[in-house]
Amino acid sequence: MVRTRRTALSEHNEASQGRLRRLNLVLQVPPIALAGVVLVLIDHQTWWGTSALVAGTLAAIVAMERWTADDLARVALPCLAVSAAVWLFGALVAGSSTAFYGIGVVGSLVVPQLPRHRIAAGLGLLAFIAAAGASRLLVSQADVVGDLVAYMLIPTGAFVVATPLLYGNQRYLDLMKETREREAELAVAQERIRFAGDLHDIQGHTLHVVKLKTVLAQKLVHRDPERAQEELREIHTLVADTISQTKDLAHAQRRLNLSVELENAKNLFEAAGIAVRVDRPAEADPRTAELLGQVLRETTTNILRHAQATWVRITLTGTGIDIVNDGARPGPAPELSGLSALRQRVAEDGGELTVEQHAGRFRTTASYGNRARTGAGRGAAETITGGTAAPSATVLEGSR
Image (cartoon, rainbow, N blue to C red; front, side, top):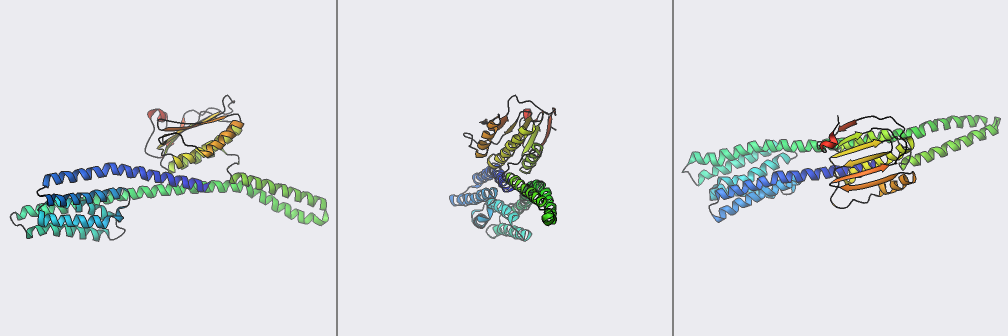
């Protein structure tokens, strides 16, 4: 079970990274491409000069696209080489100060990605940009001040401003990824502690009793053989019962505490960055609560493993549970083997388990119809925590 939850959290984190990558792709690449096209249109003079500007812009676009995929290292050197050559060509041959655009974008992306010596690399790249710009004076001295401003001051100033900004952005993404990983590890650790506690409850007391009865049987084996045999029979019964309970625990079939399962589900969702709300107007009877806990556990794993949810709403009543999330993928509802097995168990107990997918939402409902409620109402929603995305106003109504 711990391994399953770890895998589910890992898969959800990978899905979150994929969504973040797509968001960066939409927000970052089009402006880079548009700015490059505008500069080419403004500064084009000859076909070969325009070709060089296009090459620098393409290097910038490729570097940004790979940066959003966290794969910049693979193209860093080629992009740097192309954009550096374009800048030299623009300063010495084409007379185009906008040729700096490629090296400015690529350099400000590459320097923050370096594992060490970032400052030295940044200063070296800054010196190259300034030296390449100053080389313009070797071929043209008609407007020295203007050339120094256009080819040295503006490019170096833009690089000095852009690099720290992108470094801060990179650090933010790294910290966010690290935080998610730590939260996932914490959730797994909590699951291990809970499992260890259940195992201790099963075996700790039994083993202590077996130890005492074994000592007693050793003392009685010669003095009172019949009593010793009785003690040994009781030891056998205790061990057999413990083995059975341990097997049930290992297969997640031991009687579940619904409140514990609910708290565990909330912790797992929070670790995955998913907002969760719980409504609990009434308590179910113990037999119903056990199966509802199993439905909640299986559904939690399915959401973390298969969905791309940003929020989950859990509603517990005296006769059932309803779990809704907004992470349904396009297409027909998937076949979930774990829920299929639970559907039969719920039906055998007089209930009904249904799943449905509609308008991007996936709903799992286990209901026992008109079975009498045994708990008092608990009122409004308990909590909503974790994540940044939120469901609609209807879902959030009454949350704290």
